[in-house]
Length: 212
Image 1 (tube, rainbow, N blue to C red):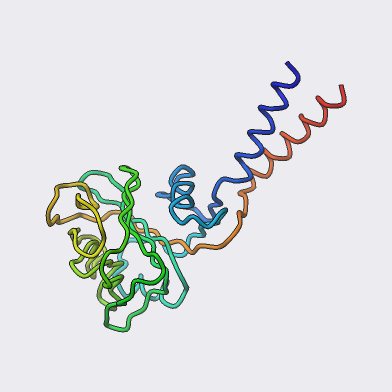
Image 2: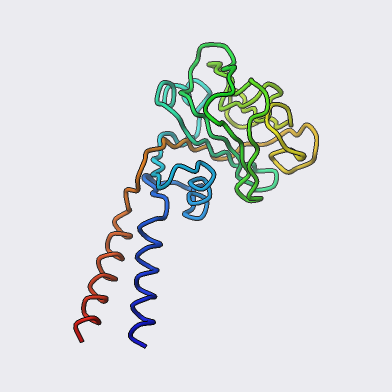
């Protein structure tokens, strides 16, 4: 019985230690979603830190002022049409340069977290860096968010797949955009205070049991 308890505690501690870290007050990124993104990136343990969260009245320039030049990011977009959370991994900094980033470098990808679907880049049109565009991926565009940050569309174009990433239909889809959150990515995990307390508590229980 003691051995089973110790095994349970060790598994719990291992899970806490190796889950993706989340920093910031997010409304879209659950621990399950963060762990899935960590798996898709395939870099080992990561921490996702909230860089931008859409507020009432924000426009595309607001988005760009927060994220431009900040390095690689994960973007989450709430699709109000069906409640799905879609987004993408931009391996380079966002910018307002007025052009596409045309490269196959960096292993960019799109995703639908509700459907657990990842679509990898298949053409050179990686992202669009226009000051009056919100977060926009692909040449079609695969994900487009307009200047108001409240609407846009999805379309299968520059990222591989057989189904539109918003999962509304297989073709071009107009979307109503709810929340938008952008996260920076760093190596390793910075546990939340609650996780640290759980780790400490589990460790104390394990020591107590071993000494009995």
